[in-house]
Image (tube, rainbow, N blue to C red; front, top):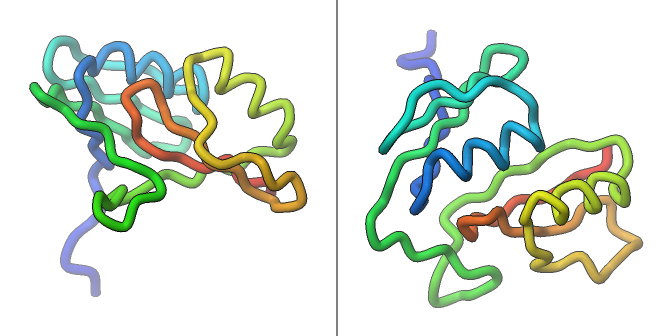
Length: 119
């Protein structure tokens, strides 16, 4: 029997509203709240939350001396189409040069790494 159930994944960031809007465009869902905490209620019942973090320093990828701590894997049907979409929303390429892989690495507008992964 499990001790707990995952409530939400929370990302620290400088602007919770802006980052919630980015992920709402990427993943769908509805942003709830305002100010220092925004919940993004995703299809399927999951929650991705965004918390204001004054002085937020984005993780570095790849960097052995400044670990990324975590990243999100986002499953997509078409890598090229998804890449165009996330770049138009403000993501930046971290490592998408190897087009033979079934995944590519990006950073969201606050600098958190995420992967687009072909299903």
